[in-house]
Structures are given as C-alpha cells and as structure tokens.
Image 1 (cartoon, one colour):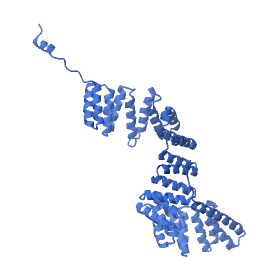
Image 2 (cartoon, one colour; image 1 turned 90 degrees about the horizontal axis):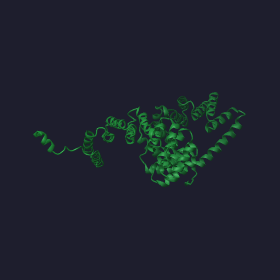
Image 3 (cartoon, one colour; image 1 turned 30 degrees about the horizontal axis):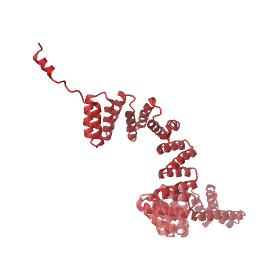
Image 4 (cartoon, helix red, strand yellow; image 1 turned 45 degrees about the vertical axis):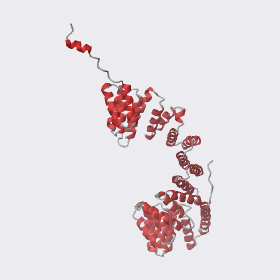
Length: 447
C-alpha cells in the first residue's frame, strides 16, 4: 500500500505552469502603451523570472530603462538580448539608437552605434534602417565613400524619402560635387516641395554663385510659407549679393515685421537701409540690435557708422569709441573716427586714428586711402603716395584711393594725373551703375 503522504500527493492537482510568455509580453505592451511604465516593468520582471533566456524580455526591459533615462542599464539589457540572439534586429537597432542619443556624452558612442548597425548588415545586407543610419554615421565621420555605398544599398522606396535624399546630397556636397548634391535635392523638391528642401537648394545655389537660382528657390519657399521670417531674411541677403537694394530692403523689412526680436534680421535691415538715400532709416534697426545684444561689439560699430552717415558726429564718436576696445571692430572704428576728425579739421587726430586702423588691420584698403588723404592734407606727400599705393595694391578699384592719388598727382603736376583722372571717372561710372542696380526692383517667380 502507498503511504498516506504519497497518496495525498497523488490525489492533489498538479501545480500550475508559468503563464505563457506571449501573455506576459502582451500585458506589458498594453501597460507601456498606456504610459504606465511601472506596470509594464512588473509584467516584464515576472516574465524574466519565468523566461530568463528570452532575448525579447531583455530587449523590452532595455526600452523601459532607456525611457527612464538609465542609459547604462538599457545598454546592458540590449547587449544581453543580442548575446542571446545575434540576429535579433530590434535589439541591434535599439542599441544603435541608444548610442546615437548619447553621442554628446560619450566620444566612443558613434563608433559603437555604427558597429550595432553593421552587425545587422552582416546577416541582412539590404536592411534599410541599418544602411541609412550607417551612412549617417559614416558621413559625420568624414568617410563619404563608405557612406555613399550604404546609401546605394537602399531600396528605391527608401532612397526616395526626403531624409535619405538630404543625406545623399550632403554626402555629394562633402565630396565637393555641388552639382550632384543640388540635382538630388531638386528632384526631391519637385516630387514633394518643402521649405526645408528649398532652403537647402538655395544654400547650394549660393555656394555655386548662382544667386538668381537661389532667389528662385527662396521665392518658392516664400509662396509656401509667407509668414516664415527666415525665408524673407535669406531672400533679402541674396538680393544684397545681386545688388538689388529695393528688393533686399522690402524682404528684410518683412522679416523684421515677422520676427521683431530677432537681432540678425534687425542688423541686416539696418545694413541695407544704411546704403539707401536716407541712411537715417538704419538707426532704429541698429538701435534694436544693440538693445538685443548689448555686449556685441558689432552693435557699437553699426550705431557709430549710422550716426556718422547722418553727420551726428558726437553720437558717432561715442559709439565708435566703444567699438575700438574690441579686436574685431577696432580697425573700422578707428577708420571712421579718422574720417570724423578730418571732417572737423583735426588732422593730427585723424592721422593718429588712420594709423591705428591700418595697424589693427594691415589689409584694410579704405584705411590706407584715408591715411594717404590725411598725409596729403598735412603736405606729407611722399608718405601719402606710399599709403595710397598700398591701398591700391590691396584694392586696385578702390574709389577713394584712386581719387586721392589723382589729387596728389595734380598737386605735384605729375604727368600721370590725366590717366589717373580717366581711371577715376571709369571707376565712378561703375559705382553709379552698381548704385542704380542696388535700387532696382525685380520680380522673382519660381519656375
């Protein structure tokens, strides 16, 4: 006969087995989608107890750790998942993304992310996400040929996506092939135009010195997003490159209207207004720029130049004096202070300021021309001729340098005076032509 204990054991119902892994994962997924990460973690902890070998559980726990900001624990979980299943693509992808997100904190992260994506490509060479991310990392590392090879592995559908087009264009640009880069983005913009793509195209066109092409792209972008201040700002900047002053002024004025607290658009509008018939228009915009960036040396210089242009010499002298204290603006500030001193017939002060300008920036042609004029006024004719020669060696078409040299030749009765006068007249005609072009209004329409 069986013992009583054994009989009772045989009569008892069998102990229940572990819940199916599928059910535990489904419960964790529902909790995760419901933003209840604590409940999801409880389900996964139970799953790990019953199924410690499951790479899926380790991967899911890694996702929770990453969501909680615990990158080290997430990395360990993802690594455990791929250790248990070397072909577990989701875990490799999660590992690569984790490294990319933490690249700013860990210099080794980009290389580790690349390794995660390359691990996928060892067993699935055409996997789109792995090829795209590998290309992204290789492009950032300067390995353009390898990046291009991965982009070429993308299937046609993935290759035609905007982000893939932009990356392909960036790779071509990095290789110095601006034309191919532009062609790639042109095709993408024709299929699905966006302001982002059009701005990239405008940038590439500008790099190719195709400013009219850049205007076309920006005009199209302006039609798509007429309230985008950046588009109006860039349109104005390209107009400046083309000497289209009226268009530049209107575009930048619209940019300021849309983004009145943006310091750069205020500065740009002030700079354009300074070259219009009424330079006093520039003052409010430079004053706004100075208020927005009070510690920026360029603000003091801009205000000083604007006050100089409207003949408010006391205000100009104050602002320019502040600008002389900073290396990036010292040369120009001394130059305009020299001009103020000369206008006020304080020639010793003008001479001192002009010398400081060329000392601060030896390649400053206008400052050499000013130094030559002051020396001419002081009857230091040999020194003046030397300074003016230096100005023209730096900028042969410098108007003031040529004009002052003509005056010097005439004072000395130099036979070169007549030829110099013809040269000045020619340069002046060109200046007037450019001034007319700068005031010209054009209408730009996208093709």
